[in-house]
Amino acid sequence: MRTGFKLVVALAALVVSPLAAAVDCHGDPTSETLAWYERFCSRLTDTWKRGGHSLLLSGYSWHTPWTYTKEKRDELESDSWGGGYGRVVYDEKGDEHMVYGLAFQDSHRNAQIQVGYAWTRYWGTEGGLQGGLGYTLMIVQRPDIWNGIPFPAALPLASVRYDRAVVTMTFIPTVNGGVNNGSVLYVMGRYNFK
Image (cartoon, rainbow, N blue to C red; front, side, top):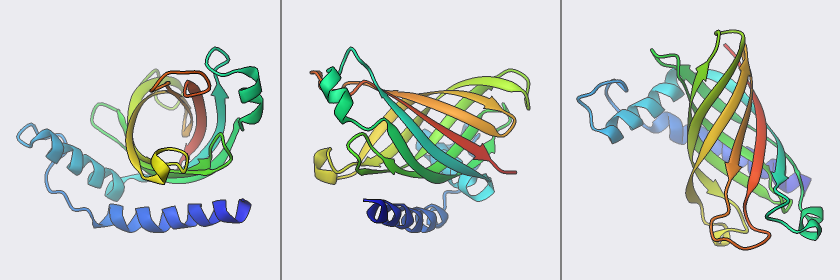
């Protein structure tokens, strides 16, 4: 498992970096004259090209006791160890934009790979303790969902930031109902280099 996980992380890094560098959208990501998809594409490429480096550290998954039986929670892995790489920029409003690639051990001890974009608005004194809310749009690959075919996902984000260190949480809801499915609070950390 450990060798396979390291291989998946290495392959994700090799695939994501050239693809992100190859995309070339033209235009100002803040321009009102561009269509929304042109602004979004410009935001992605601007973030990748101008962004500072960010190290992502995956950490913990909490499976809600009101959705999972105790037996199932005992089977599942809560330690979601893994890591990733991101590029971060701040816009004129101080909002944070990040493009990233992340690989970690999911609840079933399999590798989960995702690439995505995250936006967060922070409140509080810059450089001090700040709270933030935002969202992430991503492409996710898990062997236990859709036979491993990558799929799109959108999730809310809640973050606490102090200087360049960030702890981010998201909630993965139950999509198709039932017991032992979905409703997971996922926590990860990252460090933004200048």
